[in-house]
Image 1 (cartoon, rainbow, N blue to C red):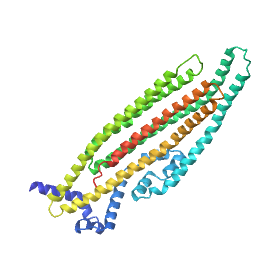
Image 2 (image 1 turned 30 degrees about the vertical axis):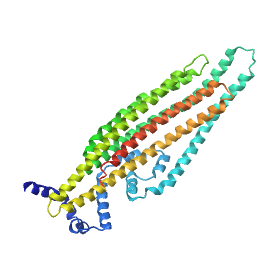
Image 3 (image 1 turned 90 degrees about the vertical axis):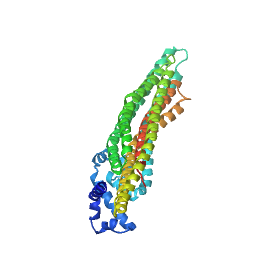
Image 4 (image 1 turned 135 degrees about the horizontal axis):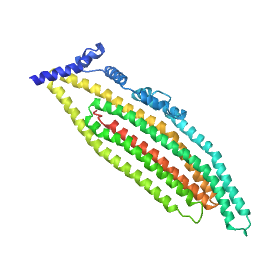
Length: 401
């Protein structure tokens, strides 16, 4: 009897505000059925109350740090407004403007790279003309000097841009890490409030590994590998007597194996543990509902239904925060990824144009540089995909309905 009285007392303390909050909410426990409009009002009130308790200021700062194009893709709304749009179903209205912004950004990047690529082509063509006009009786070393001068000018131009791309990649990875450090604590807090305690115990170490260890591997190991590959590509094409293609190939393979290994281990652990934890939390929630409904006389079924409404609003918030975080992630990476993609494709086009008209070492270097730039794209997309996987698992967890 003492156990029953204790349960009644605890649940009355928890749910008594909903019983006496006003005439609009008294129907939750006084009537046998609720109309759809009454349910919507209760859920809206609960969502507004819970959103007011969450701090999105740091995510707002991350949004404000985006470029103008990134803000336009996000929608030029505050982060909280974006959450409310997703909850209300109004988010799909921005689809056309997003694609328009991406296309405009793509063509702007193409136009921005035209001068530098035209300069590279002009240098290479000049080298070919000078080398062709050189008398064949002259010493071969003169041709090597001409190649060295022209090749050095091309290196100065393209490596300068490559360093900018490397800096852009590093800044993007740090921005993604900063968003992880802010978004995941909010998601895990809401997940804990819903009752996904087991899931949180799995995701917390996974979040720490993703935002700490994996980002550090990408920044401190993979980015230096990119630099080594770039250096060997340059040195290996300075002279026909220096062959370093195998070294460049080795660093490229090492890069791919590290990325593949990290992604495979992380995703496998997250998928297996997340699915198991979600099943445990689902059983725990249903057990708690059954205990409330059958252990508390008279009002047990009403309290169980009220718990459903509260948890439903929390689930909506959790999924909306996750979706808004992914939109912010997309707005963060789309600008650097498009820059890198356009630069890589432009280099491939220049290498194809120069192959029949200039020294093969120049076209080979430009082609190898394009392959190196693709490694930077893999860094950003790999990190973003793991962020997406982590957020998706959290959004799928504790959906008890």
